[in-house]
Length: 464
Image (tube, rainbow, N blue to C red):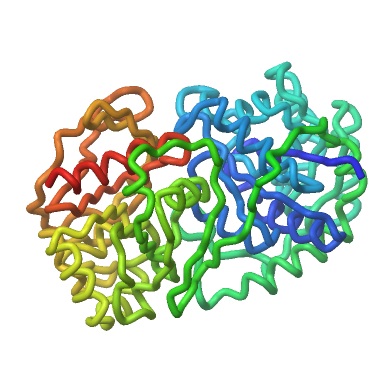
């Protein structure tokens, strides 16, 4: 069968993009298709849900954190082994770091992906026509081919929306009814990740609704993609969300990647992943695997740190699991001993919080943490910090993203000589902290294209 690809976007956030994307991923998978999910932008929460819905790892496409060539390469690679590639946009269709830079529209143009617009029709009928007309004609390089409506009240309501599409020249592909039972609770800017939420059941029910009211066959027909060449050795094996007891996970990377000194390519790498730590980029993990063997472990459930040469503590929601993390004294001590004897560590955002003296939750409860870094973080009087970041460190330009509500309650840390700016080049207060061979920052670094950041950490360790 012909391969299909499309990008789900919307006029604005809170239109139901992620909900519809999850429904489509599972519904298309239920048709026996191999479905590859992607996410525009730096979001690391939606990709977790995508992976669950599609059964394949969701991959970030971001033209700010990486080059156009890198985005084109990974899109061709991963979409090439699927029947249909489904990309979820970020924010509104044309919202980028600077005008359209890095927007869903920019990704759609770069990769020549047809766009399906999701419209929140809760308080709208035929007035959808001028809205659709504006999005269709604002940028001639964007191929807006269809629309799906969310929060539709009835069949008669949908007929007004069909008329609007017909008069604008966009296909009405269907709708989703408003259903409170199918809403995934939100947390911060992304969808909530909680042990109490039955995501499988919600996604299954969303898919069943979509199968009734969205023309999936027509969606696939109008989004047929040109054939692409794929590397023979592409491996899309899914890394588990949580693995314990400790198990190794081999991840394939390009064979021609040259990382230099072979002694640095046989590292034992330990990565935290569980309910509290899950914010990782798929391509980052693939690059890390080139440096050695990866072992996943859980700061909540495992009692000792696995044998490691490089510890990676990614972001997540440690503030939600302060009690459980603090109660695991054995692992906290194991990590502290590792770091204080010079073990190489990179901790970002939630990982930084975990290495501090304590985390104070929104209710004011303080939970003791690893005590590696002389700081405490708090969720009280929380303030959102959000945006792309560019760091200049040791002649390297490092790109990434910052998103958190926590802040320092106490901080007495040593920072590297690093200048960090936002997307517009304005310097921000974000730092790269260091103690011995432990590096920590609120910045989530993307090294999926340029592995020199990891090499630099290893070099710093070697020279310390």
